[in-house]
Amino acid sequence: MITLKTPLKLFAAWLALLLAHAGVVDAAAPAVKQPQVDTPRQVLFVGNSYLYYNDSLHNHVRRLALAADPALAKQLQYKSATIGGAPLWHHNIQHLLTPGNLGMKAPFDLVILQGASTDALTQARQARFHQDVLDFSGEIAKRGGKTALYMTHAHVPPSKFAGADMMRQVEAMYIATGNAAGALVIPVGLAFEEAYRRRPGIKLHKEYDGSHPDLLGTYLAACTVYAAVYGKSALGNSYDYFGRVDKDSAAFLQQVADDTVKKFFGR
Image 1 (cartoon, rainbow, N blue to C red):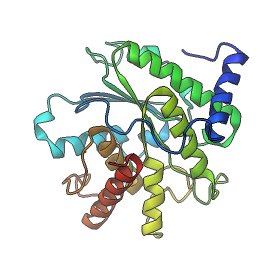
Image 2 (cartoon, one colour; image 1 turned 90 degrees about the horizontal axis):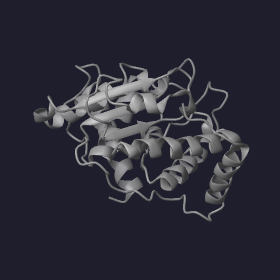
Image 3 (cartoon, one colour; image 1 turned 90 degrees about the vertical axis):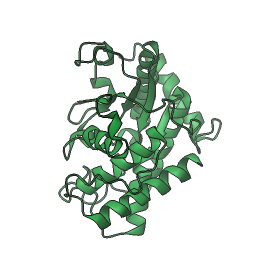
Image 4 (tube, rainbow, N blue to C red; image 1 turned 45 degrees about the vertical axis):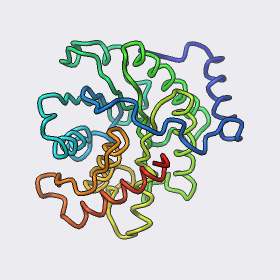
């Protein structure tokens, strides 16, 4: 498992983020604006419960891709490695990437990394996330793959972490880290924010904790991931989780995902 080897390494990661937030490094906009893999086929999601809630995000993204192009049915191989409540350093990335360990003969061509939802709230955790992404993306690149970062959504009440500036902290951390790693940043958190702005009464979070995604939140995340990594809009996609997402909600969330991705990347 990759770990921070020295306090100096942690300090360097913290300094990089500090400079990014101070404007020395441009963290206001993503450096990578286009998908780095043409039609990703071997895809790995690495994260925690934000990914595995509601029948697992990787299933929804794969189904969106297949609804758009059924010819991919025998080609798409999606895997998800999740640990409840885990930051990235809980994962043994070398093990996950080694062909055969997850039943995959070929290396992953895209690996999507998701950190803990509160990583952005302290300098120490920001620095750890930053360094872990650099380390993980280095391992991914050695095997010929590309890295993408799943920007988490902000908490809402009743979460004790809910606050007006949480999304800005998350956004800044993911963009700064993504730019440093040369990774595509997927603006899921911004899509949540935009959906709430347009429909304040929509239910994207679990009501009992204000943290985990509800089904519509996962559907919105899937549409955003699909649009970002495939470079194609989910607008008009027929996938509705086998009728569990009503037509109005599906159309609305597809539109929010499309608008958010286009605005974020300037496409």
